[in-house]
Image 1 (cartoon, rainbow, N blue to C red):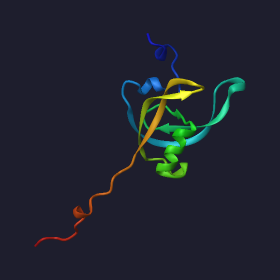
Image 2: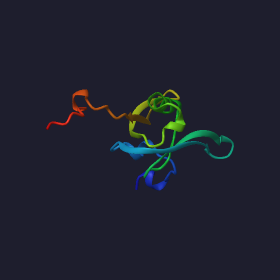
Image 3: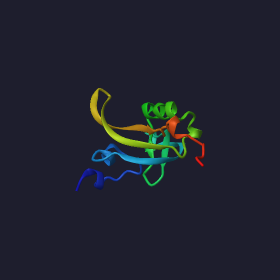
Length: 117
């Protein structure tokens, strides 16, 4: 048994996407209490369709903000969540990173409304 199975989390963790990134759609984001006892703090939590919610750090929040604007505009957008090595408190650890999936506009030459008779 792996620790991930022995100690399940209600939030998405890097171990959940280490083997394979996931592509999902944002349901909504809300501020929620995260942690226990005196360590509990209000943090942004990203709710996803068909996945566990993800606690957002500043890096991932700003990535979504740059791609999609205000958090009220995030629902319905697709994202890829992956595991990356990152620095945390002076140590290199696995962390979650978000890649926004932005639809590319159709090339102009394919937008032809003319009908051949």
